[in-house]
Length: 437
Image (cartoon, rainbow, N blue to C red):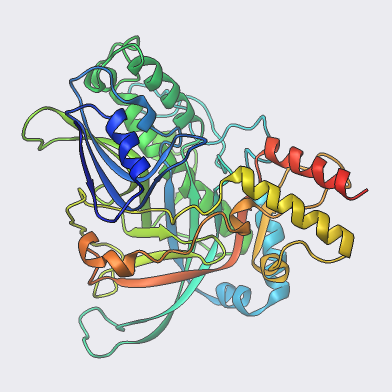
């Protein structure tokens, strides 16, 4: 039987499903808030160690959201103060931000992110568009007030500082989709992970070049989205560098934080058989900084070192990984039904459908596809309570290795969110239109 370890109590159904799915030589570490979506079959906050030599790899553990994660740039200046204090300027910036970021939810024919195939030097062969590759993506300005030292070496001089970051959550786009299809096709034929990812023969699997490119594609996409967001919000002269993988065709933001999720890498110091680690939470070994998610309206959680530095070395018994997402409360199907019901009641009583309507319109914008002129502008599902607020780090800080970290909760100021998927949105709009007659 596979080795299954858990930091927190987890549902018996999750352990049973893992025990049936994994091989005896595999291992899974369940982080706090570990879960499996019944509809999509994807795992969250679970770290896998997969035997690379054995065939019959458990393909169901892999998500198609390869290269997902968050990237952030620390910003400051008069333009930030204006967005925080002036609602008129903030709303104008939100409108520009909405138009600046391409989204696959808005345009079904759009493909975002770099292509998987590159040349012999892993450089792009064709141009590509940076943008949102799914409904959970967002980018925008977040701020926080927290205690820190004026200089890391000055102990006993902590005071309140205001910190602001441009934060982007997005994935690898078309590179991730292509890689997932090729990897699943190879593994379902009985190929081992070593054969699929280390052999140069393209008929055997994606190969090492594809693995390298897809693991970098999400960071590259997010870095370009941050540049677009900075221009839209009025950030002057953001630090940027040429994207070397595109031969300098594009410029990418110099990120202070780059968190990698759904990351697959070979463990070089494995004592026995070759092993690949697949992390559906945060793989701190390959990430720069540590940032986790709360529910979207509540913001994101940033972990700084004891001296207030973004860069730090995380070590814990969960193979140096952390939970990335907070617990899901309601499946999308049930949430859509709730949204439709609220909008029908709002139309009937001539009121706003969302209880927090004013706050959301003041801090958020989104990009829903419009099917008819009479369609109501439904808020994205993450703003309807799909996920709970982060609360697990206080309980498991010691076990996760972040007990000495400063926890900074960044709150949304001006944020653009990817809209609802077209199929779910069309069904909701149609139901609301029928109920409002």
